[in-house]
Length: 196
Image (tube, rainbow, N blue to C red; front, side, top):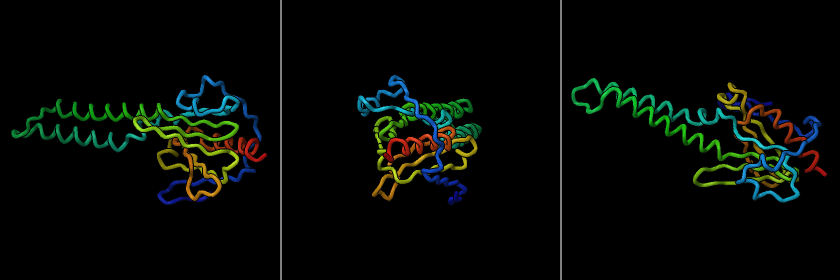
């Protein structure tokens, strides 16, 4: 375990450290439709996740803070004779901006899907422009669990997957709950299905 810059914890676990647990199949109905089309008919789905629902607020923190500043500024400006704003109008602008960002955050959260099968890990994301990243289990050479400060405060983490011959991570599962437990499930699947 190493401490990364900015207080983030970088947890690297060797494949042998994963617990030897059974990998029960998940019913096909639990797999989002956006991912089902990418699966083979005989592919066994082991795990289906989304980021924690806290992703909606945590990914929106910057905009929420800016909305509060804008509302406060407009409300303060309403006390001046030259301003066309009223205090309720300024607050309403901030609330509308915050509501719009949280709505977008919900759409972003809803379109995320993380799937582990007996062949690969899949990360699907995107509202207007979608992306589906996958890493075959037989090619996974390195995994990483990273917890930013805000993730650590809420027991979340991001899991990255790197395949052979790549210097970067091919797929990420962001802000997943119980990241070290999920990481162990992935390592178990890699050992069972990817190291035959």
